[in-house]
Length: 98
Length: 320
Image 1: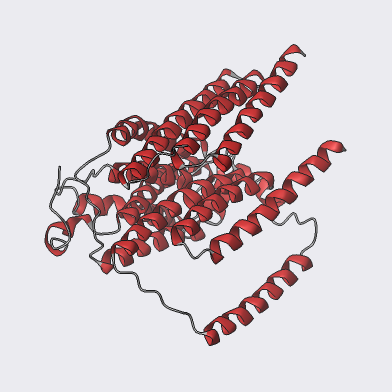
Image 2: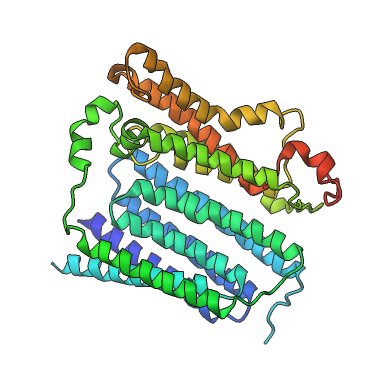
């Protein structure tokens, strides 16, 4: 019962992070700030959702697989964000200034 | 009741988004945008397959449809923009003809979809009844490697033919950057072993759960794509016979085992039930290896064994 409530709260907060990240992607002015919004929000949001799903998992094997998914997406997300940003910089895209 | 309505709403949004994405992909004039939209379309399509209770197809769609095809399209795009761009207007006649043909195709497909019985069991009952005989517990794998193994065998052949066609086109310009991004390098070092492990896992789990040769091969190919992005290349002593052996081993193993039992009074591609499990694993292992290497070679886009002579005018000669 308590576990279900905790799961629900974690899922909701995770979804909020995704919402914030998506808003940032749509509203921020240039590629660097958009990446900033996306990667940070999605990594934490996904982490919360993964923890929520772990609480509902049937076996430790499933918990391990969920953890592995999170770690892989953390790696891929941060790596790809760096690649996109460095390519943008190499092509001479100036960071946004007010 | 409310839960069902929510899921229906989700499906409706998903279906609408898919059609919208497909239209955006086709109508986009910017090719890069079109490719990115196509990848997004593939990922949502995988989600649609999950909703249709077809996780095997979803895995294949996500890895091959969205992932590898996306990588292939992006690398093709890079080569396209490296050459000169030629804008050509399609003539009105051609557009009209295509439009009319597509319209009839739409009517035909629509008629077929609406004339289908709403609840079709198809052959799934038969498959479930005979699953014991196939020696694997996952019905999709049973169909792919045992009941309908002809189709899978020919698919392997098609992949090999596609690679031969690409190789015979010859000199695709190789993108050589002297600078390899250190983050990408580190990422590759961490991810490639994980990909190989996941590929083996997908192959093994395919016997009783979603997974199998094509998914395992696609993950293996993803590892290859990462390596190629890091300017990695196969040492020239392996690019000849060794590489070619790996490319054909899936097909050879399939045909050899298929024919092996012909001499024991069975038809082509029929395995004795008591031995089927082991042979299916053997075929699947060889097939995943071949599929993975073929898909990775398709991404590379040229025969690695002829790089030194025929491509020397484009190749800058920077090898590690």
